[in-house]
Length: 220
Image 1 (cartoon, one colour):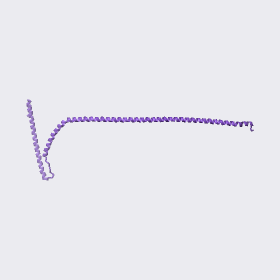
Image 2 (tube, one colour; image 1 turned 180 degrees about the vertical axis):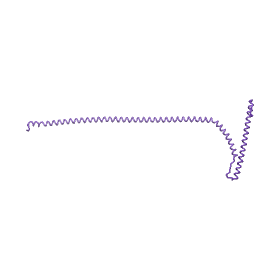
Image 3 (cartoon, helix red, strand yellow; image 1 turned 120 degrees about the vertical axis):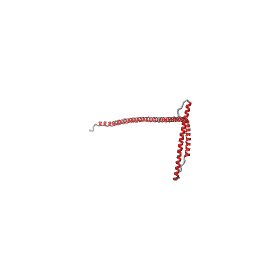
Image 4 (cartoon, one colour; image 1 turned 90 degrees about the vertical axis):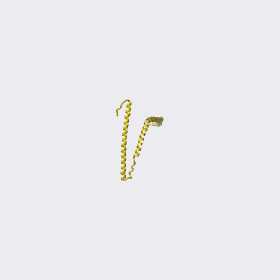
């Protein structure tokens, strides 16, 4: 029922050997697993450092591109400022040249205008002198007439006169007007006589001129 004692002894002697083998197999498994884990960890570490190195390289490239772009922008900005200053200087130069041309044109026009005015003044000088001479004569005649009229004109001061004095003054004015009308009539008759005499004298001159030329004037 309990089995063979020899068989049981062999089984009991095999148990420590099996246990040792199991432990050995377990240790090998753990060792291999640990090695595998270490290998995987090393692989991950290598990948991490590779990625970090790549990131650092990409960051360096990015920084370099940013620096180059900033430098390019500064150069472009400086170029734009230089071109803008050049355009401003060119515009200022063109403005100065235009203003100078306008001044020269205005000066030339002013000189031409002055020359034309001088020529006009010289051409009008004789006419003006003759006109002034004629105006002088007319002014002299006008002054003489004005003097005569002033002498003949009497100032009327009638504000303080009464009715009888006003009537006397009115008669005096009427007599003076009658005298002036008579004088005017005498002057007109005298002027008419003078005109007739001038006409007769012209006729005589013409007759004498025709006689000298051998012609006979039949006018009477």
